[in-house]
Image 1 (cartoon, rainbow, N blue to C red):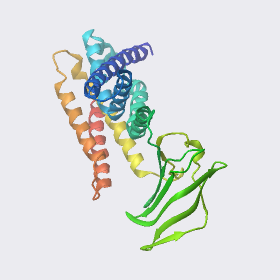
Image 2 (image 1 turned 30 degrees about the vertical axis):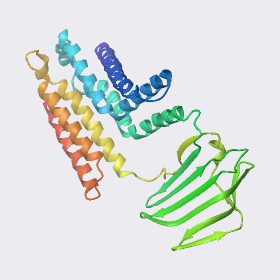
Image 3 (image 1 turned 135 degrees about the vertical axis):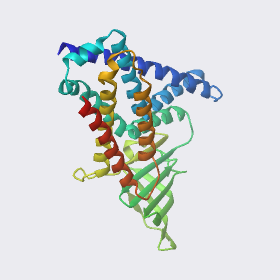
Image 4 (image 1 turned 90 degrees about the vertical axis):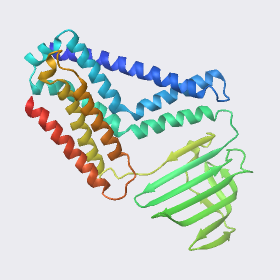
Length: 318
Protein backbone atom coordinates (compact mmCIF):
# COMPACT_ATOMS: atom_id res chain seq x y z
CA UNK A 1 0.00 0.00 0.00
CA UNK A 2 2.97 2.32 0.53
CA UNK A 3 3.76 2.03 -3.17
CA UNK A 4 0.18 2.95 -4.09
CA UNK A 5 0.32 5.96 -1.76
CA UNK A 6 3.58 6.97 -3.43
CA UNK A 7 1.94 6.66 -6.86
CA UNK A 8 -0.98 8.83 -5.77
CA UNK A 9 1.44 11.42 -4.41
CA UNK A 10 3.39 11.45 -7.68
CA UNK A 11 0.24 11.67 -9.76
CA UNK A 12 -1.25 14.52 -7.70
CA UNK A 13 1.97 16.48 -8.23
CA UNK A 14 1.85 15.74 -11.97
CA UNK A 15 -1.82 16.73 -12.22
CA UNK A 16 -1.23 19.93 -10.23
CA UNK A 17 1.65 20.97 -12.49
CA UNK A 18 -0.39 20.15 -15.61
CA UNK A 19 -3.45 22.03 -14.33
CA UNK A 20 -1.44 25.07 -13.24
CA UNK A 21 0.56 25.38 -16.47
CA UNK A 22 -2.52 24.84 -18.66
CA UNK A 23 -4.47 27.44 -16.69
CA UNK A 24 -1.65 29.98 -16.99
CA UNK A 25 -1.27 29.41 -20.75
CA UNK A 26 -5.03 29.64 -21.41
CA UNK A 27 -5.28 32.70 -19.15
CA UNK A 28 -2.47 34.54 -20.95
CA UNK A 29 -3.92 33.89 -24.41
CA UNK A 30 -7.40 34.84 -23.21
CA UNK A 31 -6.05 38.02 -21.61
CA UNK A 32 -4.28 39.02 -24.82
CA UNK A 33 -7.48 38.41 -26.77
CA UNK A 34 -9.61 40.48 -24.37
CA UNK A 35 -7.36 43.54 -24.11
CA UNK A 36 -9.19 45.18 -27.02
CA UNK A 37 -12.54 44.90 -25.23
CA UNK A 38 -14.05 48.07 -23.77
CA UNK A 39 -14.11 46.92 -20.15
CA UNK A 40 -12.23 47.91 -17.03
CA UNK A 41 -9.00 46.00 -16.55
CA UNK A 42 -10.27 44.16 -13.46
CA UNK A 43 -13.29 42.97 -15.48
CA UNK A 44 -10.96 41.79 -18.28
CA UNK A 45 -8.92 39.83 -15.71
CA UNK A 46 -12.06 38.10 -14.43
CA UNK A 47 -13.31 37.38 -17.95
CA UNK A 48 -9.93 35.88 -18.88
CA UNK A 49 -10.04 33.73 -15.74
CA UNK A 50 -13.50 32.39 -16.65
CA UNK A 51 -12.37 31.80 -20.25
CA UNK A 52 -9.35 29.77 -19.13
CA UNK A 53 -11.53 27.78 -16.73
CA UNK A 54 -14.05 27.15 -19.48
CA UNK A 55 -11.37 25.86 -21.85
CA UNK A 56 -10.18 23.47 -19.14
CA UNK A 57 -13.70 22.04 -18.83
CA UNK A 58 -13.70 21.33 -22.58
CA UNK A 59 -10.45 19.30 -22.64
CA UNK A 60 -10.36 16.92 -19.64
CA UNK A 61 -9.02 14.11 -21.87
CA UNK A 62 -5.98 16.21 -22.89
CA UNK A 63 -5.39 17.24 -19.28
CA UNK A 64 -5.54 13.57 -18.27
CA UNK A 65 -3.09 12.52 -20.99
CA UNK A 66 -0.56 15.26 -20.15
CA UNK A 67 -0.79 14.49 -16.42
CA UNK A 68 -0.09 10.79 -17.08
CA UNK A 69 2.89 11.68 -19.30
CA UNK A 70 4.35 13.87 -16.53
CA UNK A 71 3.62 11.11 -14.01
CA UNK A 72 5.59 8.54 -16.05
CA UNK A 73 8.46 11.00 -16.62
CA UNK A 74 8.75 11.51 -12.85
CA UNK A 75 8.77 7.74 -12.24
CA UNK A 76 11.36 7.10 -14.93
CA UNK A 77 13.62 9.92 -13.75
CA UNK A 78 14.37 8.08 -10.47
CA UNK A 79 14.00 4.53 -11.80
CA UNK A 80 10.85 4.07 -9.72
CA UNK A 81 9.18 2.31 -12.65
CA UNK A 82 11.30 -0.75 -11.83
CA UNK A 83 9.84 -0.86 -8.30
CA UNK A 84 6.30 -0.40 -9.58
CA UNK A 85 6.59 -3.20 -12.15
CA UNK A 86 8.34 -5.51 -9.66
CA UNK A 87 5.83 -5.27 -6.80
CA UNK A 88 2.49 -4.36 -8.41
CA UNK A 89 0.48 -6.71 -10.59
CA UNK A 90 -2.42 -5.67 -12.81
CA UNK A 91 -4.97 -5.89 -9.96
CA UNK A 92 -3.00 -3.58 -7.66
CA UNK A 93 -2.39 -1.20 -10.56
CA UNK A 94 -6.16 -1.12 -11.12
CA UNK A 95 -6.65 -0.16 -7.45
CA UNK A 96 -4.45 2.85 -8.16
CA UNK A 97 -5.70 4.11 -11.49
CA UNK A 98 -9.43 3.19 -11.50
CA UNK A 99 -10.52 6.02 -9.13
CA UNK A 100 -8.64 8.52 -11.31
CA UNK A 101 -10.12 7.02 -14.47
CA UNK A 102 -13.67 7.20 -13.09
CA UNK A 103 -13.16 10.82 -11.97
CA UNK A 104 -11.97 11.96 -15.40
CA UNK A 105 -14.70 9.94 -17.13
CA UNK A 106 -17.31 11.82 -15.09
CA UNK A 107 -15.67 15.13 -16.01
CA UNK A 108 -15.59 14.17 -19.68
CA UNK A 109 -19.26 13.14 -19.69
CA UNK A 110 -20.33 16.36 -17.94
CA UNK A 111 -18.00 18.83 -19.64
CA UNK A 112 -20.86 20.55 -21.49
CA UNK A 113 -22.73 21.18 -18.22
CA UNK A 114 -19.55 22.43 -16.55
CA UNK A 115 -18.81 24.68 -19.52
CA UNK A 116 -22.37 26.07 -19.44
CA UNK A 117 -22.03 26.78 -15.73
CA UNK A 118 -18.87 28.80 -16.30
CA UNK A 119 -20.49 30.53 -19.29
CA UNK A 120 -23.42 31.60 -17.09
CA UNK A 121 -21.03 33.10 -14.55
CA UNK A 122 -19.24 34.96 -17.32
CA UNK A 123 -22.53 36.20 -18.79
CA UNK A 124 -23.63 37.51 -15.38
CA UNK A 125 -20.32 39.35 -15.08
CA UNK A 126 -20.65 40.94 -18.53
CA UNK A 127 -24.26 41.97 -17.91
CA UNK A 128 -23.63 43.72 -14.61
CA UNK A 129 -24.92 47.24 -15.09
CA UNK A 130 -26.41 46.35 -18.45
CA UNK A 131 -29.90 47.57 -19.34
CA UNK A 132 -30.65 44.36 -21.23
CA UNK A 133 -33.25 42.32 -19.37
CA UNK A 134 -33.95 39.05 -21.16
CA UNK A 135 -34.82 35.68 -19.72
CA UNK A 136 -34.95 32.51 -21.83
CA UNK A 137 -36.62 29.35 -20.53
CA UNK A 138 -36.04 26.07 -22.36
CA UNK A 139 -37.97 22.84 -21.94
CA UNK A 140 -37.07 19.77 -24.03
CA UNK A 141 -38.81 16.41 -24.12
CA UNK A 142 -37.79 14.00 -26.89
CA UNK A 143 -39.07 15.52 -30.16
CA UNK A 144 -40.93 18.35 -28.38
CA UNK A 145 -39.31 21.62 -27.39
CA UNK A 146 -40.67 24.81 -25.90
CA UNK A 147 -38.96 28.19 -25.64
CA UNK A 148 -40.18 31.13 -23.56
CA UNK A 149 -38.57 34.57 -23.97
CA UNK A 150 -39.28 37.27 -21.40
CA UNK A 151 -38.10 40.86 -21.90
CA UNK A 152 -38.02 43.83 -19.52
CA UNK A 153 -39.88 42.07 -16.72
CA UNK A 154 -39.34 43.48 -13.23
CA UNK A 155 -41.22 42.88 -10.01
CA UNK A 156 -42.41 46.48 -9.82
CA UNK A 157 -42.50 47.44 -13.49
CA UNK A 158 -44.00 45.59 -16.46
CA UNK A 159 -44.80 48.58 -18.69
CA UNK A 160 -42.29 47.54 -21.36
CA UNK A 161 -42.54 43.81 -20.67
CA UNK A 162 -42.89 41.30 -23.50
CA UNK A 163 -43.71 37.60 -23.51
CA UNK A 164 -43.04 35.16 -26.35
CA UNK A 165 -43.44 31.40 -26.38
CA UNK A 166 -42.82 28.76 -29.04
CA UNK A 167 -43.92 25.12 -28.92
CA UNK A 168 -41.98 23.07 -31.45
CA UNK A 169 -42.54 19.47 -32.49
CA UNK A 170 -40.16 17.79 -34.93
CA UNK A 171 -38.62 21.14 -35.91
CA UNK A 172 -42.01 22.70 -36.76
CA UNK A 173 -43.71 25.44 -34.75
CA UNK A 174 -47.06 24.17 -33.49
CA UNK A 175 -48.10 27.05 -31.21
CA UNK A 176 -46.60 30.53 -30.77
CA UNK A 177 -47.83 33.23 -28.41
CA UNK A 178 -47.00 36.90 -27.89
CA UNK A 179 -48.10 39.47 -25.32
CA UNK A 180 -46.95 42.95 -24.29
CA UNK A 181 -49.79 43.43 -21.81
CA UNK A 182 -48.44 41.75 -18.69
CA UNK A 183 -48.70 42.10 -14.92
CA UNK A 184 -46.58 40.49 -12.22
CA UNK A 185 -48.37 39.93 -8.93
CA UNK A 186 -48.02 37.42 -6.08
CA UNK A 187 -45.03 35.81 -7.83
CA UNK A 188 -47.25 35.05 -10.83
CA UNK A 189 -46.90 36.45 -14.34
CA UNK A 190 -50.23 37.05 -16.09
CA UNK A 191 -50.98 38.06 -19.68
CA UNK A 192 -54.09 40.30 -19.74
CA UNK A 193 -54.30 39.77 -23.52
CA UNK A 194 -52.21 37.87 -26.04
CA UNK A 195 -51.83 36.89 -29.70
CA UNK A 196 -51.61 33.23 -30.70
CA UNK A 197 -50.44 31.39 -33.80
CA UNK A 198 -51.89 27.89 -34.22
CA UNK A 199 -52.78 25.74 -37.23
CA UNK A 200 -51.55 28.48 -39.58
CA UNK A 201 -54.00 30.96 -38.03
CA UNK A 202 -53.24 34.08 -35.98
CA UNK A 203 -55.82 35.07 -33.37
CA UNK A 204 -56.07 37.80 -30.73
CA UNK A 205 -57.39 36.89 -27.27
CA UNK A 206 -58.60 39.52 -24.81
CA UNK A 207 -58.99 37.16 -21.85
CA UNK A 208 -56.35 36.85 -19.12
CA UNK A 209 -53.96 33.92 -19.04
CA UNK A 210 -51.76 32.92 -16.11
CA UNK A 211 -48.22 31.96 -17.19
CA UNK A 212 -46.92 29.18 -14.95
CA UNK A 213 -43.21 29.91 -15.30
CA UNK A 214 -41.93 30.08 -11.70
CA UNK A 215 -40.19 33.35 -12.53
CA UNK A 216 -39.70 34.33 -8.89
CA UNK A 217 -36.46 32.32 -8.79
CA UNK A 218 -34.77 34.50 -11.46
CA UNK A 219 -36.97 37.60 -11.86
CA UNK A 220 -34.25 39.92 -10.55
CA UNK A 221 -31.55 38.68 -12.95
CA UNK A 222 -30.83 40.84 -15.99
CA UNK A 223 -30.02 38.01 -18.36
CA UNK A 224 -30.44 34.31 -17.84
CA UNK A 225 -30.97 31.10 -19.79
CA UNK A 226 -32.76 28.46 -17.74
CA UNK A 227 -33.26 24.85 -18.84
CA UNK A 228 -36.20 23.31 -16.97
CA UNK A 229 -36.26 20.07 -18.97
CA UNK A 230 -37.21 17.10 -16.83
CA UNK A 231 -35.40 13.85 -17.41
CA UNK A 232 -36.86 10.49 -16.54
CA UNK A 233 -34.68 9.15 -13.75
CA UNK A 234 -35.66 5.59 -14.62
CA UNK A 235 -35.03 5.82 -18.34
CA UNK A 236 -32.01 3.97 -19.67
CA UNK A 237 -29.73 6.33 -21.55
CA UNK A 238 -27.90 3.97 -23.90
CA UNK A 239 -25.70 6.75 -25.29
CA UNK A 240 -24.56 7.78 -21.80
CA UNK A 241 -23.73 4.17 -20.91
CA UNK A 242 -21.80 3.70 -24.15
CA UNK A 243 -19.85 6.93 -23.66
CA UNK A 244 -19.04 5.93 -20.07
CA UNK A 245 -17.71 2.57 -21.24
CA UNK A 246 -15.61 4.22 -23.93
CA UNK A 247 -13.89 6.74 -21.65
CA UNK A 248 -13.33 4.26 -18.82
CA UNK A 249 -11.69 1.82 -21.25
CA UNK A 250 -9.72 4.56 -23.01
CA UNK A 251 -8.39 6.22 -19.85
CA UNK A 252 -7.50 2.80 -18.43
CA UNK A 253 -5.67 2.05 -21.68
CA UNK A 254 -3.67 5.27 -21.32
CA UNK A 255 -2.48 4.27 -17.86
CA UNK A 256 -1.61 0.72 -18.88
CA UNK A 257 0.22 1.65 -22.08
CA UNK A 258 2.42 4.12 -20.18
CA UNK A 259 3.01 1.60 -17.38
CA UNK A 260 4.11 -0.96 -19.93
CA UNK A 261 7.16 -3.04 -19.01
CA UNK A 262 9.01 -1.81 -22.10
CA UNK A 263 8.97 1.75 -20.73
CA UNK A 264 10.85 0.72 -17.58
CA UNK A 265 14.08 1.41 -19.42
CA UNK A 266 14.89 4.98 -20.38
CA UNK A 267 16.12 3.64 -23.73
CA UNK A 268 12.51 3.40 -24.91
CA UNK A 269 10.94 6.74 -25.76
CA UNK A 270 7.39 7.92 -25.13
CA UNK A 271 6.69 9.07 -28.69
CA UNK A 272 4.79 5.95 -29.77
CA UNK A 273 2.29 5.75 -26.85
CA UNK A 274 1.80 9.54 -26.96
CA UNK A 275 1.06 9.40 -30.70
CA UNK A 276 -1.41 6.50 -30.29
CA UNK A 277 -3.26 8.26 -27.45
CA UNK A 278 -3.48 11.53 -29.38
CA UNK A 279 -4.93 9.72 -32.39
CA UNK A 280 -7.60 8.07 -30.21
CA UNK A 281 -8.46 11.40 -28.52
CA UNK A 282 -8.88 13.12 -31.90
CA UNK A 283 -10.89 10.13 -33.14
CA UNK A 284 -13.18 10.28 -30.07
CA UNK A 285 -13.63 14.04 -30.54
CA UNK A 286 -14.96 13.57 -34.07
CA UNK A 287 -17.11 10.58 -33.15
CA UNK A 288 -18.79 12.02 -30.03
CA UNK A 289 -19.02 15.67 -31.11
CA UNK A 290 -20.28 15.51 -34.67
CA UNK A 291 -23.69 16.51 -36.02
CA UNK A 292 -24.27 13.42 -38.14
CA UNK A 293 -27.85 12.17 -38.25
CA UNK A 294 -27.06 8.88 -39.95
CA UNK A 295 -25.41 5.99 -38.10
CA UNK A 296 -24.30 8.27 -35.25
CA UNK A 297 -25.08 5.67 -32.59
CA UNK A 298 -23.42 2.92 -34.63
CA UNK A 299 -20.20 4.95 -34.91
CA UNK A 300 -20.23 5.54 -31.14
CA UNK A 301 -20.70 1.82 -30.44
CA UNK A 302 -17.84 1.11 -32.84
CA UNK A 303 -15.64 3.58 -30.95
CA UNK A 304 -16.30 1.72 -27.68
CA UNK A 305 -15.50 -1.57 -29.42
CA UNK A 306 -12.19 -0.16 -30.70
CA UNK A 307 -11.34 1.18 -27.23
CA UNK A 308 -12.14 -2.27 -25.83
CA UNK A 309 -9.72 -3.90 -28.26
CA UNK A 310 -6.91 -1.49 -27.34
CA UNK A 311 -7.55 -2.05 -23.64
CA UNK A 312 -7.69 -5.83 -24.06
CA UNK A 313 -4.35 -5.81 -25.87
CA UNK A 314 -2.44 -4.00 -23.10
CA UNK A 315 -4.32 -5.94 -20.39
CA UNK A 316 -3.25 -9.29 -21.88
CA UNK A 317 0.33 -8.02 -22.16
CA UNK A 318 0.30 -7.10 -18.48
